[in-house]
Image: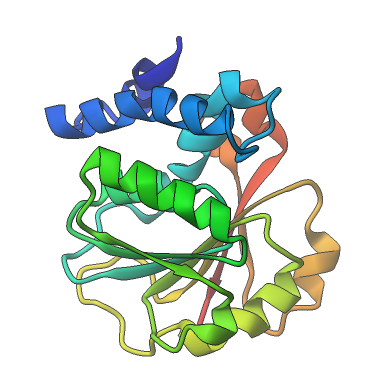
Amino acid sequence: MIGEDLILKYFPDLTERQQAQFGQMGALYADWNSKINVISRKDIDNLYTNHVLHSLTIARFLGPLAPGTAIMDLGTGGGFPGIPLAVFYPHVSFHLIDRIGKKIKVAADIAEHLGLQNVTFQHGDAGECHATYDYVVSRAVMQLDKLVKLVRPNITHRPVPGNRYEPGLICLKGGDLEEEAASVRLPVIEYSVNEFFGEAFFDTKKLVYVPM
């Protein structure tokens, strides 16, 4: 099972527009990756499993989100997890931020080609972003305790009615997180990604939620 069929396996209720957008991602990322090393060259053939579906772990965890929800993707790189999530949640606003300008350029171009109207971009770091969000999401950007301290000012204290989870940090990580979690002075809730998806790639992957 490859490409958008893999996404449909787990999210069979996608609209035709969403299916088309996910279907376009493969060619768009392959084209950009031939110019700029956005994703490991060895990994581009696994785009849908290792990047798109992995990003959608967050959607599987959060479930339905209320209109008006706002999410920041810190260290988005070429747009993960933010762009797959923006396709999945067209009624939610996303702000994608990264220190590397050429990667933000890639993410912005792909978002434009996909016709996404719910995404904004920033070249910089969290300290340069003074807005607040219901959730900050991230993929393996830095150690958990440092990440929590960095994003706390960007987390709102007013949850959106209708969302299943309180505002907080949601990050995708790999390996043993016991030591990282022990240094965080907030509740750290950890899930194995293979609770959500059956592919072998996810056997060592974790989703971590830190409510704030």
